[in-house]
Length: 357
Image 1 (cartoon, rainbow, N blue to C red):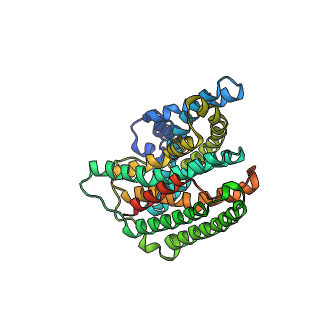
Image 2: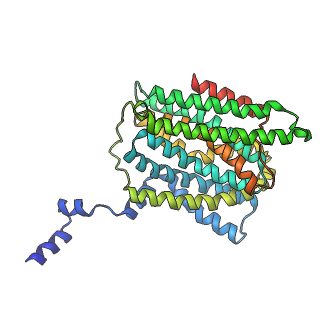
Image 3: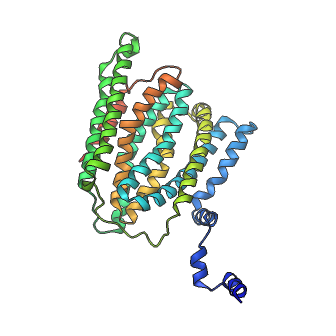
């Protein structure tokens, strides 16, 4: 009789206790998310671009377009996984994690471009990411959240700290650009040394900021309020972590194809390396963060949105750019400096001041 009861519990479709104990499998949750999100249907482009590149089935321009279409759904999947982790850690740590993993896409693309000697593409992607995060991502989050909620609040202390750090980093990036004379070779060595020193200072500042917000003064940087999640059940932590690992590997593979094909595509479409880095890489690489920031604002979790937008820009200026300078001495054909063209410096400075105000 015990075996019969067990069999009945396993086969009865309406037994709530049995359904609670079993629950949906991780693969069914992943497949449900893919079916319900049309953006994730573009995941078919991932195997398509890998196969096309391996067998040389497409031109450089076609590979460029396919790789862009492949990175976007990977970034969205990365966003959903980080949201699940953020649900376990809170908005402050969740925003930091989302910004970090979102910037991972841009970092992988930048490292690949750095190894290929595309220094202008790397610098343009840094400047474009800072401007995109501080103006477009933050502004659109305020707009989308304000369309749904009459008033929204966020932690002023956290936003003020991140804006201050971003302003400090922008000033540091401005210093090598004001030295001048690097193009004739006379001051190139000084600019390279100055960039190395600034890179070390910026990384130290970023680490001290993490220590300040996550350990010594963490009580000042909690969320103001937690909005409704619209009944959406977050993924289990093991599924989220496995997705993060798998998507990171795929992003690295697709980024190789993206950088290898960007030169042919730029020549065919009439785009410069500066435009590709400032616009295309910034938008494609920041797709995951944008999806999470916009979703958080719509759910009245503005702390998460502000943390992602300002946190991502701050992390790029204080950590990603200095790391790329240091990495250029190891993997690059020539050292990269923090000297930007005047237009990029002006745009980064204006965007930072605007976000702070």
